[in-house]
Length: 161
Image (cartoon, rainbow, N blue to C red; front, side):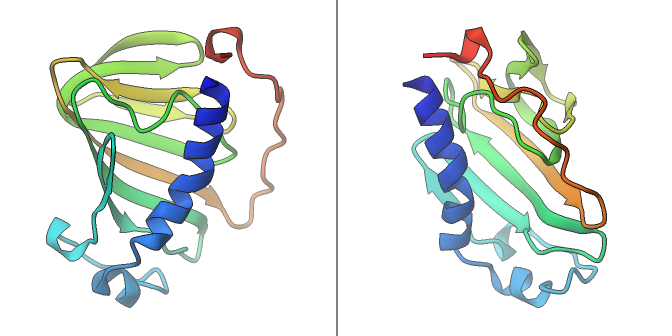
């Protein structure tokens, strides 16, 4: 069931981000132009785990797809269970604390920590039971780079339902 939940969350997150629609600032940045955005410029997407603010979602001349945003996770919640994808991703905790998951290992997540996940490596973050957690995400792939092949499509034992 956890694998299905993870799959559905990953499948639906881009739709949720699209459904919230680009803000005026994001629309003006459609060609990947330089811009400064404030949180008030961005249309928030609310979910049962917290709120996501998609700052930049438009391709640049080098990157496709692009996702730069801020997630505010309620205490004890996570956006989705640990997952993986062909894109590289950075996550930086800016407030609160929780638990990082990276390739089968869990460690304390605290303000100032940055996680880097290479393509196809399992990663995630969950807010502590008594602390909300806020993080910035930078997720992308290069346009002129071939998408890396999934080296092992099987779900790790610790993530199986």
